[in-house]
Image 1 (cartoon, rainbow, N blue to C red):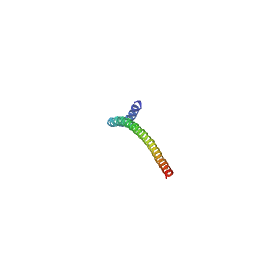
Image 2: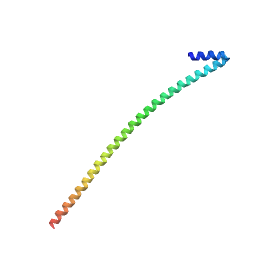
Image 3: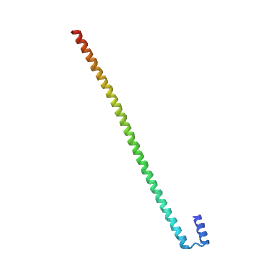
Image 4: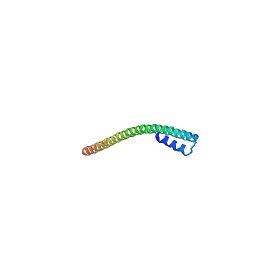
Length: 103
């Protein structure tokens, strides 16, 4: 504020009219108000960005958890399928072997 008064006093001494001083003061006040509004807008936008980032991270974690669960279930299914196939092959082998002994 002190700098503004010194600047205004210097402007008066240098021949600037009161109307020009008033215009510059109004422009400065308007710019300050606009800057404050922009700072508020920026804070709101940053807050919304943070909320969206947290939501994205949560969704990503849930997706990765489901993906891991799916992979584990698929692996378990494939192991069971392999065991089932091996059991069937073993039974076929034993059946043929016992059939061969009879004949």
